Length: 421
Image 1 (cartoon, rainbow, N blue to C red):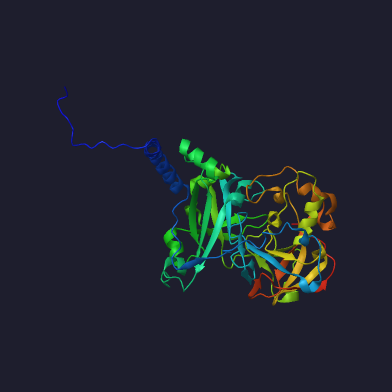
Image 2 (cartoon, rainbow, N blue to C red):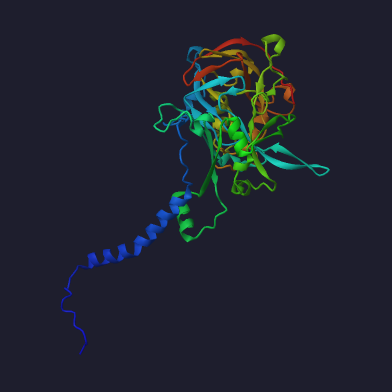
């Protein structure tokens, strides 16, 4: 006979379905909790910059229909217009699509003002900083960038806020593969496609006080044959990014220093002609890159079966135009977009960077480079390189505006002869 009798505990009869539901809930709750906790760690909890708004489209991309057949053929000049606008705040990283943007002497406002660089051995015990791109590190295509600019209508706006005083903030986000992944992490990645991410930020244009407080320094950074002095802001770069890219030397980030922009010569107009010498920041060679969508579609149609889908974004243009027939841009010398005029300096000599998928960072072994080489070696000055798209210089040393939908007017046409670096 038991020592204690719990007659006060009521007997509850439940159906088999309810019993199974209770057991299931009891078992699944901790698993769901682990999933929620893991998901919360997948993205750094980045606080939005104070007093700023994020630039970029909040609607569907204007390139969402770029693969439709209607863009394969040209239409009348009265229907030529800007289809899509892009800036790349950090060189060779993912871009930001705009509905409208400012045009300044160096190109699109906020475009390529920053560049990653690695510290290299320059011999005899010395070192130097050298820019890095997707050409060698294709995973850079997976680095997302955001540009936040001061906005007086923001509820957190204050003229004394650090993010406002620095003219905004650039936020850089990349996959973090350094953290160990358990069973829950692997299952979450399998189910959602999500990956752990890490973010860091840099002030867009730090004040002198911010430069001193953060210990930024002016140092030379080599980009192609130039070595301009730029602002070294490398203290913000986390080591996880160096590991993600597979760079075996120190990784840093630099900002174009006002007054130290690179002068553009080669095919650009000269100071004697226009009153000033064109300049650029961390673009490869010229301030702006324009591309006709019909040209991209024609290249795509010539690719062999099984070649990657060819988005215009593989060519990293600033201004994508619809309306003109394929390769009509080859003869443009001067154009007006909306109210702003541009000198069309030369064709864009293509390297193999377009072989890299801008979403995944995966590099195709041959395409579209092989197809381009088969029929677009059209400029004797470019040697054995194919050409697609055009390089431009703003015709004003001041400022202008370009908007999606702006009409394109060709003011001058002529021949082009590419001049190599």
